[in-house]
Length: 380
Ligand SMILES: CC(C)(COP(=O)(O)OP(=O)(O)OC[C@H]1O[C@@H](n2cnc3c(N)ncnc32)[C@H](O)[C@@H]1OP(=O)(O)O)[C@@H](O)C(=O)NCCC(=O)NCCS
Image (cartoon, rainbow, N blue to C red; front, side, top):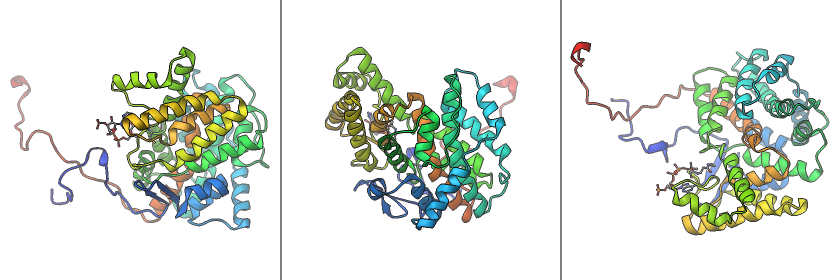
């Protein structure tokens, strides 16, 4: 046991620093989130998802030419091998989009000429490709499962606008495009969250980018992580359809010792800075679309949970109502999280492989004391 450096493992690795990273800065006490040192509020107010991708992958903001090139390259990669479309068509109809995404991303590797190359350049190419393809898979599968024709990508559009076009069949309004663009910026990275950690662990074995992203997607879908936004909307829907009082509904959940999805955070002990933007988006979009009820319900729940449990809303709470008002189905909320977070996952895989060492921690053994006797079968 000489290589064990900590005596006891904090449950859930709380507070453990597991790597160095130059990508994402979080101050959980002050509610600060920054990508490459740039505050998330600046990025949400002034940037685009494409610019954020460049920032995450390259470590600095792009010049005008570099931004154009990033946009063009993401647009050029808006293509899926026909075999992927066939795979999406052959999926049993009961399968949820998040599981389809996980399997389809794994299959993307069969058609990626750079699958086995783990050098920096190839990984950047794969990051661009996966970012474009994941958005397409989510939109294309949704059209297929609804029996609607697949919408061809429009390479003149932004990533956000093209996604909404391929999903809904019509070009989004500038307001909808910008709302999704901001949501994509806000979800793009979050340091060593569970799915990013999973991606880095996989990459560190010198597996490959696709395998790392598949690990991350499997991790994101859990309701304690990215699956929380879907759980939030199920609650809002249930309150809406039953005519319940939102506060009484949530009180009932707490009385049954249930956690309220969209609240609490391992790292933030104050307002999640992403929630600040999503709250405003949910309110503004609701007001302009005559769907203010989702914000009102959410706000009532937030005020109660904050006062009663001292818990703040996290990124998933107001993204639920925001996505719903944008016309996105509830079981696409977590896939849409992946549409954004792939930018961060791939940035972390690139960083990991640029200076790799196998990630292999130790366990604090609490089993029967060593040595235990081996008892023959007939004597047990
Ligand atoms: C995010 C989350 C997983 C962080 O978990 P964590 O750091 O392990 O914190 P814990 O689950 O140990 O919670 C600490 C305490 O706060 C309570 N708590 C935390 N989140 C809560 C929530 N959403 N609703 C009710 N109580 C909550 C726990 O019950 C626990 O109380 P206890 O000490 O009396 O047992 C947790 O807050 C959660 O499950 N939130 C809901 C799911 C969610 O929104 N996930 C998305 C995160 S971005």
